[in-house]
Length: 109
Image (cartoon, rainbow, N blue to C red; front, side, top):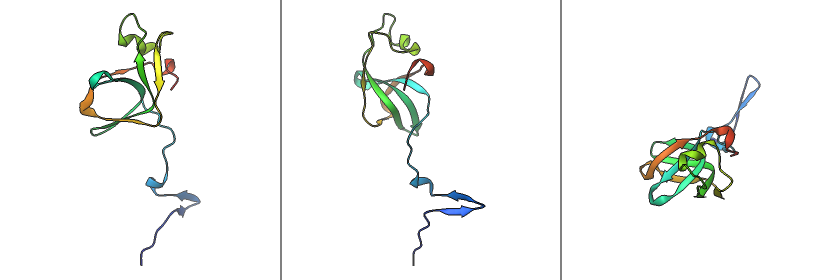
């Protein structure tokens, strides 16, 4: 006979299995990620071993800068073109050319 426990109450606190809680919002560092073949994204970055994810990500189609990609550390310019990605962007760490930490307050992600 197999018994499945969906929740456990101990001292008035209800505990549930970790895998039953859906992650609704990830609050990682915001990074610009340059990938192979010229793909450039910005989003909330997570890395687990070689699997990387960008939550609430945008593809940076056009930088719109005069001083190169690092200028976007301080937020997008008026000429920057961003394409919203539906869902989570996933990629292998070996496809990463570089990552750039950005000023979290200047990016509304």
